[in-house]
Length: 273
Image (cartoon, rainbow, N blue to C red; front, top):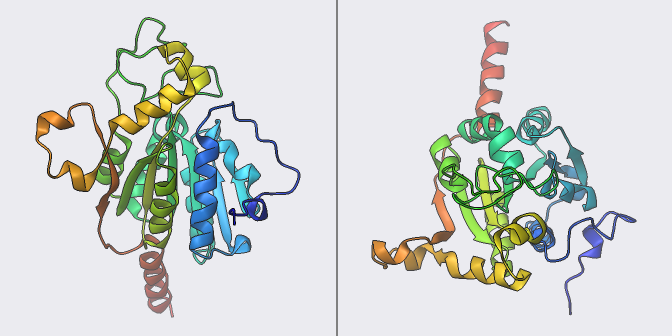
């Protein structure tokens, strides 16, 4: 029997706004399956986003949702988690919203290790606002603001998350659809800040400017560059040139921020009694 996605979609919100061939719908389906796997109560689950194509995702979800200012998703999500630590808090957004405009909020959310799950849909471009280059646009690639090739080096979002202090970091691609929900579910179950980067495709703003003939070609690219971490451990360095590691990249146990903050509150109460 086919999976029933409709039960998790807010009535009257479909069809979605994403372009034909966009991978965001694949990620949304993975998120729905992950939430179902984890048995999340929709009335006790908040999905927070900023601005952009990926940030439209929570609007389709039948749970508590918050569509915030550009780049501020992690900050708003932190406010929700601090006010209601018992809630399941998820963040969804694109590469530009998350690590460009929202970069400072992203690194401090990772540093604090608050129990939230951030799903970053990385399609290497600002898709909604005109096709400008983002911090993950490959060096040399074309965008509306780099018509002769992007001169900037790129961010590795997963490495950035690890370096900033996130305690669960994983990566997959829109091609590897069945892996998306498994990694998101593992992130949700982890007690601490989880970042799941999903390499995605944008046929409209990235693909057509960079001479991809079709969405199929873009999906093939995602398949070809992805190497599971277990396989990478057995490969020589020269074989990994130009490849992207997928799977769980980092995991550790560390005190969760809200729990530690609650201890401070109790300590303050005792001192003032």
